Amino acid sequence: MTKPDSPARDEPGPVSSSVPVPTSAGGGPGAGAPYTPGEIVVHRSFTTKRLVFVRTGHVIDHDERGLRLWIPHGCPMAVELSADGRGLRDMPFAEWVRQPTVMTTSIWRGPNIFMLIPTRGAHSVWWFWDWQGRFVRWYINLEEPAVAWRRDGLVGVDTTDHDLDVWVTPARTWEWKDEHELAERLAFPEHYWVSDPDAVRAEGERLLRLVESGAFPFDGTWTDFQPDPSWQTPTSLPPGWDRPRA
Ligand SMILES: [Mg+2]
Image (tube, rainbow, N blue to C red):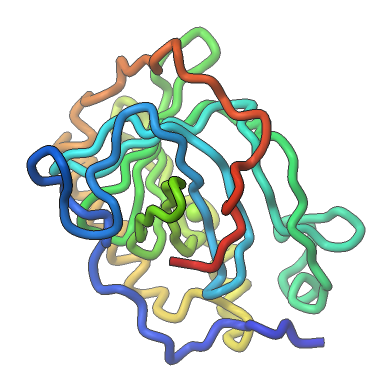
């Protein structure tokens, strides 16, 4: 069985991030920038066209450094699962690509995430704290340059995950994560959403030069972040969460 919307390998991706930089108050370029702190956001991942993962968050802030989101433990989410409730990582990719799948709503049980979506670049950077509030690591998520959108009062950010990631410690030691997944999936080019693994790795290596020099965003910025205590985590995904990709 072939999924009806397997990625088209000749489909060009954006060459730079489309999260627009805000200008003066009252409007900016693109779809609804600037974003207002406290706004609810749906952060969504696609294969190419097929929605596979959604979480809600709040806009922390938005400036020339990028758009920052707070995606807390306990937020509503949806994930693509097989009919028997398994996920992409619960079986070999060869088996996954033959599964009928369904978007299934649930609650994010992972840690709080502070996410920086830069104005340029095929990645986002995530900050993590332990449950005592101590900053414990950064995570470089390699992904297609995110596209932010605003429709019918809802703000969204859409991307395609590139699977390869990097963990970075506060001491700026680092390690690649999920190299094996990238390698396994590349063997199925008719189903896989990453078409240029060398570019994915090169983007990771570009970020690692910033890590090793202690440059922004790996210079301690936002490691003491605290979310606004007035922010209410929604109890369910807002209407429009499953609209077509921006
Ligand atoms: Mg990833």
